[in-house]
Length: 223
Image (cartoon, rainbow, N blue to C red; front, side, top):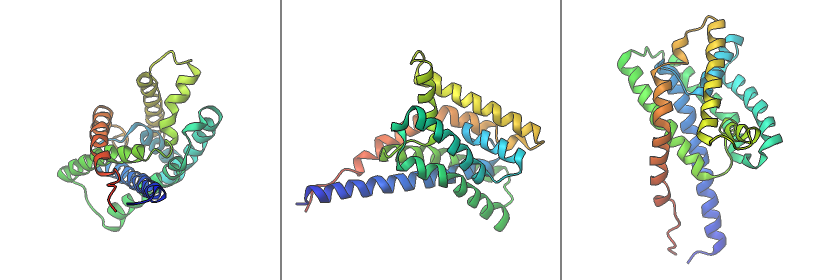
């Protein structure tokens, strides 16, 4: 039989794997949403709007925004910070930038309607699966996912988490739209049917994938 230390190492390895795979999938998801031109998730909407206005790459701006939010999180709900927080804030934006560069610039893919729908579906599935994996790893929340808890703290828990999340999502979406219009950029890249689908389907799909993950991740106990 395996020792307790071996089981602990196995669990740690599994959590790290879930964390890395989850954030990779989230990066691919953001890229797929961008390529589909059907809109992106709320946080990416804001970062794409501002980065387009500033003429800065999405990855660079998202890293700056994550650092700002991380400081706020550290001052208010620092217990949500972990290894997963750092990995998410540093790598997701650059993964998305790299994939968009490969598909659109290097491969020169011309995304017609069928291909755009395919990328939308890929984005939707990988977003939920990625979130489920990194949440299951339980190694820290992404900076933006911690924002609703800051809102709850400042409101004295007088509102529900769901309302706090809606407040955060609506706020960042409005900011993204304002900067996108101010920069005379294509609004379809950041807001569209994909944004609506993400808002309504992401939560249920995350729960669905989370019910599938634990069954295959428990130690077998075999020697």
